[in-house]
Length: 219
Image 1 (tube, rainbow, N blue to C red):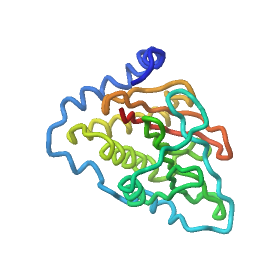
Image 2: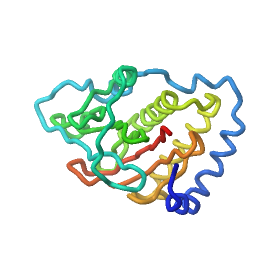
Image 3: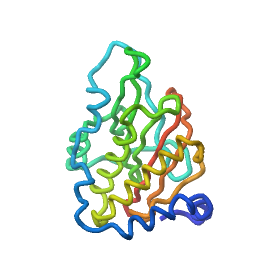
């Protein structure tokens, strides 16, 4: 569960963004299960993850609940590992699972596009925006990855997924038009699953840009 401090931040920051999302999720009717793309190889659209003779730019550890910290990933079960691999992700040196993307401006460079880390009681799913800009198709891929992880780690009714998807789409629009600014302390509450938050934050590492990080509590 989020701390009292987190809830104070959320109460002022999320009101406008969540108003439409809450109603959308409550009014969703059964029969929209096909909105979730099951076990799609999300990474293959951007890179086949093959080694290239060039520079690989990694991203820093994902943000966890308002704090940048050294994160020690929890070992995954065989079922989790198989699920991540089905999504096209591969195990990184730090224990996280990642996807790489080829830089459209530099054929000899690739960078971390997605990173998933399971830590103490939380799964952190991040997508990184090189120079703060979405790649073509990245928004849809982020949404698919977020929904896949929500489906795998929670048991919320599938009829909520359409409302959750709309929430994420609205979030991207607010990033693009500047209404949501990068911040390492500002969090936004997602109605479902319970206590799930999303951050849009600056990066401090070899990859210059911003990141979207969804935190799904496991307890």
